[in-house]
Amino acid sequence: MGVRDVEELVRPVVEAAGLELWEVSFRKESGRMVLRVLLDRQPDDGAARTRAQISGVLAGRYAHGVSVREVTWRNGTLRPTNHFQDSITVFLQGGRMRIVKLDGATTTVTRKTGDVVAESRGGDADHRDAVDAPVRAIVIDLHDNVVPGIANESGYPDAFPRPGAKKVLETARVLVWDYTFVEGQPSPMHFHPRDVVTIYTEEGAVTATTPQGVQTVNNHHPGEVVFNQRNRAHTEQLSRGKVHIIAVELK
Image (cartoon, rainbow, N blue to C red):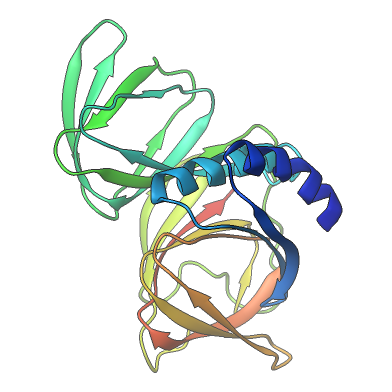
């Protein structure tokens, strides 16, 4: 699939939102190809909806087994939740949430910033909103077309676990790691045997260096989500700001 194919897929979604599609491009970063879709500026909620719609359109054509959407729950606005597939939710902004079942039963839960929650397909549908301030999260939907990991024959250790990384969740589908880059402490040269969805929560930059010595500086911002394919080796070092990640490895 090329740039023109992506433009044909996403342009109807963008124009239906009253926006302008500025650019579609594939760029090589840290030895991988990254798809970027640039739109004109809009309020955060509109941007989130449009990104979610584009993610849904592309999910059927990019067979990596996942799609990603950003969700904001606000007080007094109940949003429907349907459990059509397994999902992982990473909370970027925590708070109290109200969950209303179809029979009217209501519960209140508290989610902290950084919490990671797994939900299984087939559960009862419900509606949710925030009790107080808005609650914001990245939701990763896990589809049926599983892309399994590969054997690590690189001679380097797996990307995770690594020094400083904390495993926060494991299911039959994912391994989830919490990791903060520390200035002056590069990660060991490592190999990624699994596809990984990485969520960034801080503003900063990381320099990646391949075994061949090729360096790439990757700038990151809060709420950014990056899909990285398996079969990559590199070391990484903090080069600016603060970079904290939630890394969701796909089994």
